[in-house]
Image 1 (cartoon, rainbow, N blue to C red):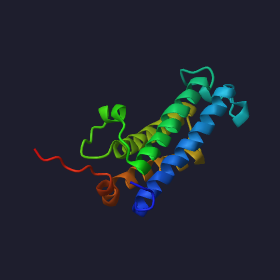
Image 2 (spheres, rainbow, N blue to C red):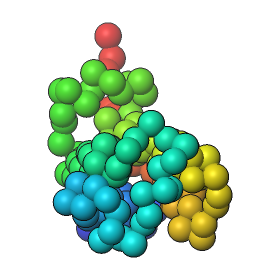
Image 3 (tube, rainbow, N blue to C red):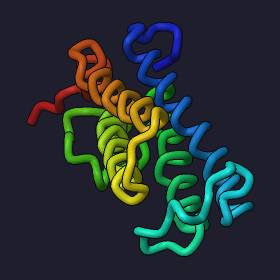
Image 4 (spheres, rainbow, N blue to C red):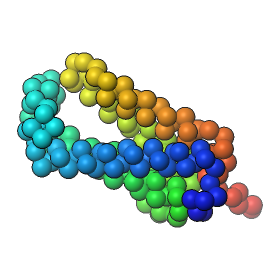
Length: 157
């Protein structure tokens, strides 16, 4: 698999995974460095209705789940390389692990934003943007052209 012979829809999916991953790595690092939220001008009062007293744990979760994992997914979508640990949690055995994880990360992003909006008791434009990104990742992953590209060859008995 190379980037040049992929359908445009696959390239778009890779773009969104990288966009999400790079942004979340940046956001996660900033929240870990500044758990008070001051670097992002986020008041600690946003966490009043949450189990957290500062942004450290949300920053770590953001960094790994929505940052590192989408970057790894993009790597798998680009290269097609196998990853044994990822295959253990691939419930769609007829698809490459990166396709399955792309679907998972779309759900994870949507859940993250819904929980965030619930905790802060409001919806901001950024929430709507990231819900749209999560839905876009889901739709792109489920497009027939993307599913066919990441389908694994069938093994005959």
